[in-house]
Length: 97
Image (cartoon, rainbow, N blue to C red; front, side, top):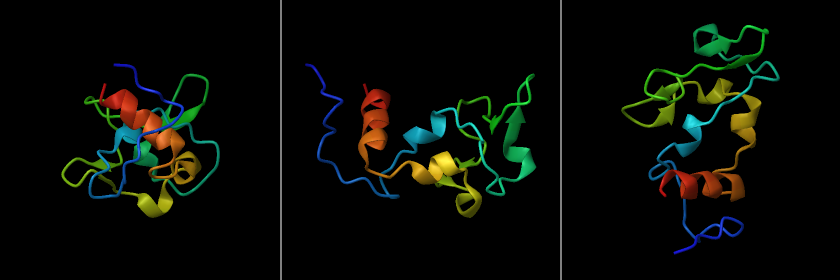
């Protein structure tokens, strides 16, 4: 069976069924949104990104609720990713393959 990622399935995504697939993506910090320092990783060239824990999930993700602990201070790239939008659905399709 082939999945067409150009047209995501008609699925309602909400905080209740999100699965936080996007919280496994690398998130580069290109602007200051107030992310607390202990959630930031800095590479050898000075690039900043959201830190990941050993389990591969974003350090700011609450593993019990699967919701962001710093939602109001989340990075701009996280703000721009619309829940249920094309990019969201593409990641969900890839995650559940």
